[in-house]
Amino acid sequence: QVQLVESGGGLVQAGGSLRVSCAASGRTFSVYILGWFRQAPGKEREFVAAIRWSGLLPYYADSVKGRFTISKDNAKNTVFLQMNSLKPEDTAVYYCAAMTRSTWGSQRVSDFGSWGQGTQVTVSS
Image 1: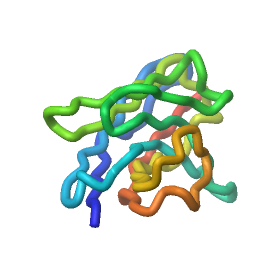
Image 2 (image 1 turned 120 degrees about the horizontal axis):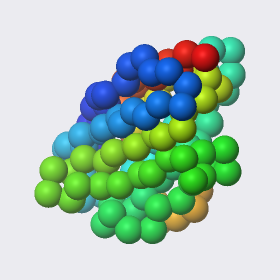
Image 3 (image 1 turned 180 degrees about the vertical axis):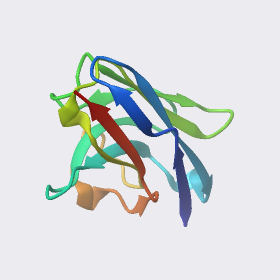
Image 4 (image 1 turned 60 degrees about the vertical axis):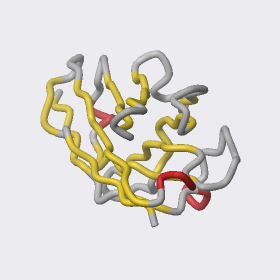
């Protein structure tokens, strides 16, 4: 079992920046990819970004490419999502997720088996 704990959400104005973090613990040796998803009220959970456990080969949803950056601190088993040029439509609960299969590039919710509790990000206009 992999435990994931997010932190760092909050309220920011449009055009601003925010960084969320996710600390992984437990059976981390089984993790192949760490990712971020988000879910706005009344909408389905959608992929945002992901990165290999090694901290290499990030990939992004088209909607955040060029604005968001995912990175990993290997010493702390923590993945970060730096969000710049935020828009009101980025408002959502952001979830950290872990994949134990070697399916790099997947954006499917069903491919990620472990999830954090989520952290709220609100972007005001």
